[in-house]
Length: 368
Image (cartoon, rainbow, N blue to C red; front, top):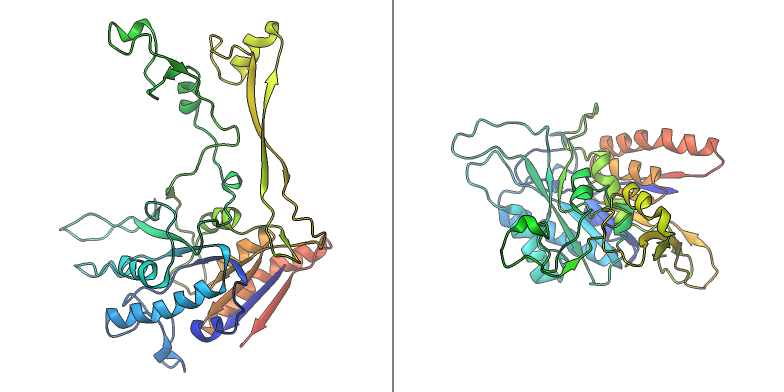
């Protein structure tokens, strides 16, 4: 793997990157008027985003950044933009939604779902605000350039709960209700309605858009640190592990659905084992099995390389650390030299560990 850690102003650095050169962007910009991440005597203190005198100036600066991010993101790429507000203000400025709406209206970004991912933090800090409720979540906006973006949902599916498995052991009426079909419904209109079988995806369920992940403790001098548990599914789902070195096309998972056939004498035992009712309407005595058969091949026969994930406000470098663990490349940008050193220190043990196994990872330091 290759990890570039670049110290410099985000706009200056982004302008040096080629068009459509990164597969995924995972980042969180400095929030307006929340805190400064640079010491008072820093030579680039006046360039720090988040310390602007007005909200319009802050949003204007970030729009310059997102314009460059859209340029360097591949057509198949996805950006996850974690942006909350300044909770210290009595009346919220809605800085995040104001920005994202302008990104969509003025720059052509697309939001391929109804709203942001809600990152709920179980270990959130309780505030003393008495005229409202404690703020316990942050929105994560998923934005793309094109509707045909690369997305491997099967890589992040989560196990079905036991309650769901139990509920889906029995057929439902044709309208989709989970109410039991049969005598227990009494004489209602639903009695005797058409039945349909409910088949759960064996690979797991869609994680949904409300994620409950605690903040990760961090010993370094940084106030806003991504947790690895938060970053990992984002990289898995949106940053390809194999991309053709010649045509640049990412491989896609080939999922196959086949049916397991079994003899009548083993039907009852097998159905019980996989949590289906022995009285199931599987008249063909078969059960669906979904699995990954292979990955697509563009046919270039030029070899594969891992995707690149970019964090333009890298901070402590969590995105790069998770990228290394998952076998992806990364580009980390930060204005603060101390944070760049911090990110480098976090990556070094992982890179050294890979060398012991014969694999090669490289850390390239630029500007510090």
